[in-house]
Length: 419
Image (cartoon, rainbow, N blue to C red; front, side, top):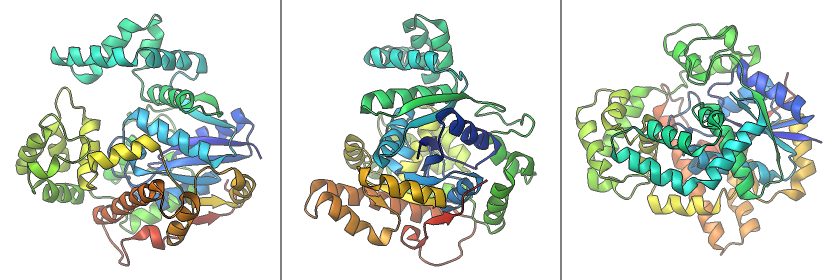
């Protein structure tokens, strides 16, 4: 069975994602589509609109065959880390032929040239960007200026200003750096841009859809019908995230003092003092982010930092995780076709595939040995994931009760083949 890999967040799944799914199948001549999807905290440092099980149901309803969770250390991180973790996860399944991503460029050659530029000049890019930051430029402007100087082709530097191009280039870099045999494919992104709030016909960005939902406006035209039914059910039940809950939890954690923040991942350059000062006066999550943000700290970086603070992500532990890559695959859901695919590639798995957390310790022991350092590290990686899930339940507008350790009690989603 030919299979294509997709790297996703589905926050929420919309018509643009359906186009990507369908065109990826065609481009790869694939029977099976496998999505590696972020869990409860996303690449840009935001909690997902709805939980990972609801988003899995949306994906399966739309026609994705297998959904595997991208672990927190990579899901909520910079584009290079996000790409590396996703590529390693797809590779570990052992049965995929290609990876297909959307891009504004829509053409693999120029994206490959961008990846080559970054790989060749990585150290120089960091040094020159740091120098321009000291001169007063913001990080995005400094990086763009250095890239324009390094690139022989002006088009290559320009494409690095578009978010999906940037991610696509990072996927290509990750494929090269990990030695992956997956064939890269890209399709042109259509409709509204990544950050656009205005729809283009029946196509709206995830950002635009979330804005409409916040305004109680209709989003039906922008979602596949079976997906809309799943999302509406979750929203009607009050299972979306509330920013005010996120703000209160962050104030409580930051309020323990600057010293308590120092051991946490990416707390550096005295930012712990900015955080405490901002928390003391902020009236909302947005105000908190705005007060901490600086020319050398982008909004996205601050949002990710706040996720690390909320989830008590320690610097040393995160460094250990990132050094080894994902140590397990969490299967969130699959269709009948997806189950057949997993049965075919089960012997080629290079990481333990966990569908039920109640069996995770046994699966990890079989793979790594009960005394192995990797086994202990995998357990700590899972502990972070479970902590993120418990904290996510505190962000929801309504909690229906039951155990907050939902990773142990939520059943893997199993659906008939999607539309």
